[in-house]
Amino acid sequence: MAVYNLTSSDPSTFILNGIPGLEAAHIWISIPFSTFYIISLLGNFVFLFAVSKEQPLHKPMFLLLCMLALRDIGISTCIVLKALCIFWFRSKDITVNGCLTQMFFIHVIASIHSEPLVLKRLPFCANHIISPTYCEHIAVVKLLCGDTRVYETYSLVIIFVIIGLDLTLIGLSYGTIINAILSISSKKADQKALNTCTAHICVMLMSYTPSLFSALIHRFGQGIAAHDHALLANVYVLVHPMLNPIIYGVKTKELCVKVGKYICRILVPRPSHGCFQPHPLQSVNIIRNGIPGLEAAHIWISVPFSTFYIISLLGNFTVLFFVGREQTLHKPMFLLLCMLALTDIGMSSCVVPKALCIFWFYSKDITVNGCLTQMFFLNAVAAMHSAILVIMAFDRYVAICHPLRYATILINARITKLGLVGFIRAVLLVLPEPLLLRRLPFCANRVILHTYCEHIAMVKMSCGDTRINRTYSLVISLMIIVLDLTLIGLSSVLIIRSILKISSKEAHRKALNTCTVHICVIMMSYTPKLFSTLTHRFGQGIAAHVHILLANLYVLVPPMLNPIIYGVKTKELHDKVVKYTCRM
Image 1 (cartoon, rainbow, N blue to C red):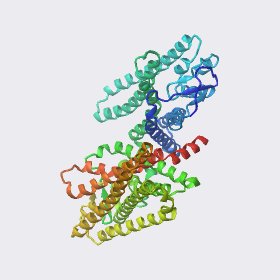
Image 2 (cartoon, rainbow, N blue to C red; image 1 turned 90 degrees about the vertical axis):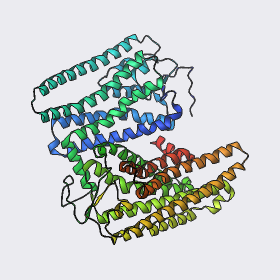
Image 3 (cartoon, rainbow, N blue to C red; image 1 turned 180 degrees about the horizontal axis):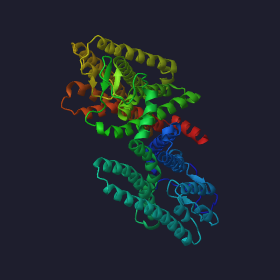
Image 4 (cartoon, rainbow, N blue to C red; image 1 turned 60 degrees about the horizontal axis):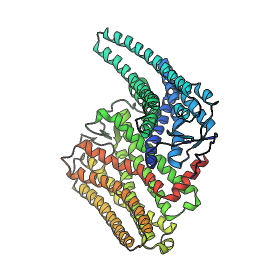
């Protein structure tokens, strides 16, 4: 880490300190930062693509939404990328010109533009540390050695002129709108007009409130903690660029339909009928109802679903990329991490895309063969995932209990063979489930109260004798979970016994740290799966939406957190990621 000299003036460099007082939590703060930024980019680029592609959307309202999308992309990109460099790589220094450039672009997008030219000609003091995650005008002014009253006053006046003028015009327009609404006799027209205004008011409050708050706190809020101010200042560049496309996408029917049409073409191609038309119950179709009791909240539930899925794909593909590219990472432990990443991608991809079609486009139907295929792949990948956790437990046992023999016992070829055994076991145990279901007749009611095709949910739709299917499924589920947990528990007991014999405290700490990571991953993987399995059979008193939400945690949370946990805790992999990112 660089050591900065704060006693002598260095006019070429500033230091961005991130969020003061929360330096230890920077790695965790980076998760919502990167998540909100990714959602913001996706949402706003989808906006731009849909409006440019569709001739019916070439209207003034959609042109304004495109301008708003470009502004949101610009303001978040100006700040978030450098903030993530601070959080992930402790890359805190920025040149004076770089700082003024960043400040200029942020303020141009926010309609303030002349301040950097004024600051450029002033001398700076020896202390070049800026508390926020980006170059804010008043934070840079505080580093000046001269009389700054003129610049502080100018900045404050400009902010109030812009915000005051804009809010006055907005308020005037709403006064006129409310007057017009009150003169409408139709309740439906009243509701439609108010609905249109509500979306704009939400966006306006999200835009102006944190910006005005940050401007006032920097000047008059000496009693407010620095980290509270820094976090609230970042809300301005994170939250509304993420929520704007969601709010306008949901509230603007034309845009929602066009986006839905394109995504439906990609994910659920149907030449015979449209994606938004309700389908009659056919002999070959099953209806999945999503999360029963929470249908009205499906659009909001889709936000964490899509967010977790995007983070999962990014994290796991990053692990695969770096392990595949770096020769020094071609070791048994990293080969196991690649296997785990592949199962995580497979497990979430089996469920989430179709679940999002249910939430966004009400595309609830699936063929019986499609349902059986989804069920087979999901259960096979889950069984494979469990087998990999067992092999990882064995890897940790050999590394801690027999470190001198590790290189000879666990070689890449042996790990590959163990992975192949786990794959064969998964296929052989899971394949009978869809084959046994194929022979059963289905009743007229083919509605599954779930986001995906779960085996026992399909069994409940059958009119025939399902005792064999239920028994086989329960035996296989418990056999995989109990056997694998027994082997993992045995390895953990042997590891703990070996750790207690070690006299070195540093070795104690290192060994326990390694075990803790693996135990966290095991708990995240097995707990929701076991809960879902038992609830489907014996939990009649548990609300359906609670069960389904917890069942979805199994395919959402572990695939998202596994690459983060192992990426942070595995030093070699972490260093390689940092090295490549810094090069870029």
